[in-house]
Image (cartoon, rainbow, N blue to C red; front, side, top):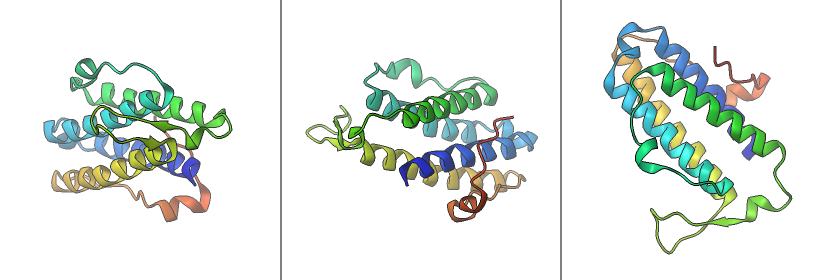
Length: 156
């Protein structure tokens, strides 16, 4: 299920980014850009934590100037997640991680992946509402509809 959620998240993120690109007003909207960056910032943080890699919070927190730079972060992060998921060591989903943002708490890798998926989902809904407000057409990003054919993320 977690593997499906990661694949769906990638697909839904790619579809949302394509829809935003189709709306000139949405593509240049600073509020939408900040929200998209917030989603990928959290995703990249949890991925670094899971992989045991350092996370340069100050650097990562800088909102890129262009939508294309943000889209590149989405694609690169998704590709790293899938690469990791395809070779995950047995039992790694039960491994615990700790975040300095929630002291005294630890989370399983499964819980961390669920957090990333649900966090992304909630903010994609906000992005879709903003896109519609700006005259764009949000894509269908429902998990249940994605399940039928399970299309891969199309980052073009």
